[in-house]
Each structure stands twice: as C-alpha cells, then as structure tokens.
Image (tube, rainbow, N blue to C red; front, side, top):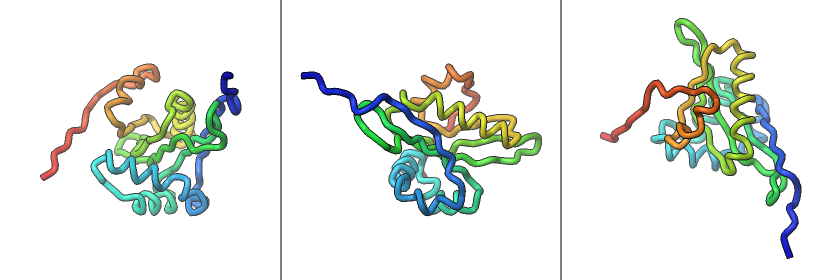
Length: 151
C-alpha cells in the first residue's frame, strides 16, 4: 500500500520584524548556530539576535508544509542593508535550510522585492559554494570568491 502524502507542498516567506525576534528565536537559533559554524564563526547566534532586535539585520523565515511534514520552518535568511558610498545593497549573511527545491525561487524573489522596496541597487549574498551551481538561473554573476586561512 502506497503512503498518502499529508498535504501538497506549500511554503511562504515570513519577514520577522525586530519586535518578534524573541518570540520566534526558538524556531531559528539552532539553524543560525549551525550556519555560523560553516561561515568561519564570524559571529555567534546571540550577536545575530542582537542585530535583528536592533533592526540592523532582517530575518526571513521559510515556513510551510510538504508531502511529509506539516507546519515546519524549512529555511531562513538573515540579511543586512549596507550603505555604500554610491548605493545601498542588501547583503545576505546567512542562508540555511533543507529541502531547498521547495523555497529557493520564492526566497530569492521575496528578498529581491524587499531590497527594491528599501532602495537597494544590488544584492550581495555570502553563500557556500553549492549556491554557485543554482544561482545562474536568477542572473547572478560570480565576481569574487572568499578564501580563508586560520592563523
């Protein structure tokens, strides 16, 4: 007997304002902590939480259901707006999750809309090498790479 799916896959992007960070933190702290381990530990989760609460960074949660799981947080993205001398840009400093096929296009679309609403001229994402494979479909160009060496 074939297992019936719980529901059809449907996700949405929720922008979490600074006033709701404490209420949603339990949903995302582990994911942020894990992502930071792969990002050279440039911050810890409490640093990110402080930036979010001070409205110096933005949190986008990918929530929804798929054929196997109901009412889940599948992914998140933390961004910040940088004011460069000639323009503003939205920088994604953390993007992590699972079942990327469910949310990648929607997340890029929603974050791009957010950037435009905030008068950003560019998007700049810090991401792991795997994103280079799929980012071309959104018109991304690799201009730089970041390499690290611990001293």
